[in-house]
Length: 90
Image 1 (cartoon, rainbow, N blue to C red):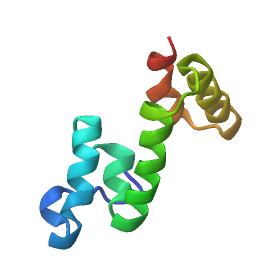
Image 2: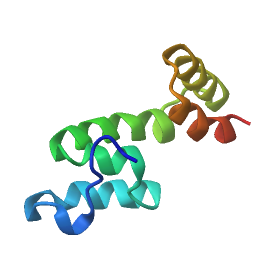
Image 3: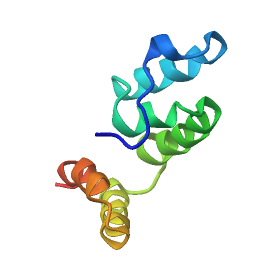
């Protein structure tokens, strides 16, 4: 069970729907951490923009990027982040 409620598209303020739609278009859907972030649409917009850059447009080698994410997940004890990125790293 989520500690913070997940926000669905029909729960978004009309003037913030573009934030939801951008997340959905870049990731295929809005799930888990992104649905929770949408409790603060402006924060979600900033966080997902950084994430999109690092994951999809940054010139950093993908092997180094994913290894770094896994190292940070291990250090912070984030099983969720590890589970999301281990398949990508492999």
